[in-house]
Length: 158
Image (cartoon, rainbow, N blue to C red; front, top):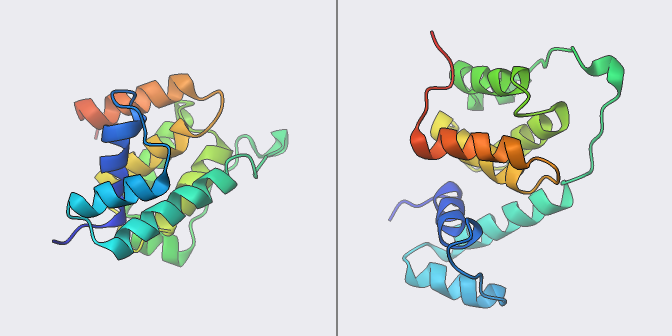
């Protein structure tokens, strides 16, 4: 089985975080369920660490007004792992007020924390969804992103 951290995060979201089921109170119980579902233990541990880091960084960044219209310059490593379409998605979401600067930086941080050599646009959409879900006051942006993920709505016209 070639499952990665994003697959586990999607599984957790779809089975616990979208409100359909109650989340077990014990992380060990969830861990065991993931093992029974066929996910490798190493990847499960990475997914839990990824979510812990997301929670730690939730409110750690703030930006002042003078950076409101700034442009994000990506590092060489970010460019190699986030292709032009992925960077275009981030810009589109920011220009349409779905992501703010702090959320964008958190999305980039969490995307770069994945082991993937290249982050696909579908994986990035899930990262964005999970980041927005964990950001207070982002309910509208989360709902728009959830529509984009589940309904596969084209993000921008070419």
